[in-house]
Length: 554
Image (cartoon, rainbow, N blue to C red):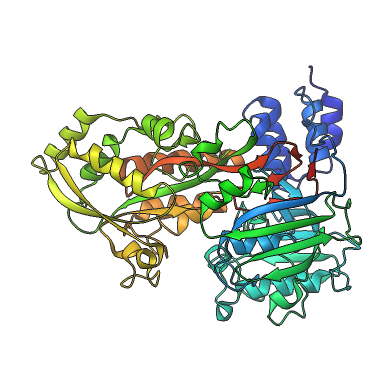
């Protein structure tokens, strides 16, 4: 298709310099169509507008988001993990709990499976020139299940609760150093400004489903969420029984298209195997999250469909940089070179993963610099590095980790591989409570161990991964990695509004981390959801959410 410069010029007239720079990148071929759509959505450009720009640039319109609509009226039955604690939007931190909460409460925007932000309770958003203030326009006519209209006061109160350190909010891991209590400002009933501590080019993701605590609930909320389950979503609570299950019914007053299912039912399970048996036996229609190793029997079952999402979830192998035997980066690089990442993907993860390159920049991120060479297994080079570091005779060390998903098997593979370069690895595999401890330095096997493997869930942007486990003052810096050049680059990346500027910083970060290797990122695993044949319209996210408003049964 040819470019229509007349249409492009008309579109440009009402766009900011930042938006026009992105359009230029698409027209000139510096930015791919996929990256243009994703970054354009981040800057608040609507999907129809992004489609028109793509057409005018000669690249075709947006792919259709429409799906064949199934029959209404079904009851959709879901198998889920047991919520680990009382369900409260401020403190919830586990997959089972956030899944239940998300059925009734909604976000300002939604991070889709392709990392494209889609409007929800906010219709649009945009940054100022420096990325220090983001303005969100709210949807009008949205009602809470309790009856009142959702307005700016509710948004400000919801986000202030999460940003207030006194509330011990789980979302402080996202908002600390970015957004303080009182920095969310009502402009009018349908406009909210967020005044940030520092420039942040990816901020809308922090108010999206990517930050699973950031649901909007009434300003009057005082606690005891399980008594009300008040929200704005397409389903309303019917019954909740702790440790047992929950059921929901269609919200007939929903602001958007009414949900297709008449009811949804959630049954809580303590383990994966009973969920598999329930799905195979017809007692449930969906398993919300299917771990690869535990669910291998379902992957080729003709009666089961697998929804596979590319995610950036991963298992971080940290090497403590401030103590022996990992003070010398050559030893850390040697261990990284001993891993066979192709076998990790094909064998351990049954092809349901992407190889990692020892930085948080997964292949799924548009800002990842794909020109940085992928690290491969090289035992000969690893042995040379060990010799050069004065560790040619090898050493003994303990790897401490958690009993979760495929981590114990991953630890055993590492144990076998590093044996080839003279390292004798003793495994100390703990239950999750013992591994994480108090999750603060000095009181946590995770943060104090010389070598460990830790599970990290999906995020739509790499900001949290870049800061918490890798910056000198990071709250999750188990590697005790302190590097001023890294800190400067990470701050620059987080501040950048422009995709090309982000990618330039990303390439520098990727190369620095390959050199230093404080953390080994061996693979990024796919998020799997299993459904019975005939169940359609199910939309999971890699954050363990499950959107069922378009679900149906044949």
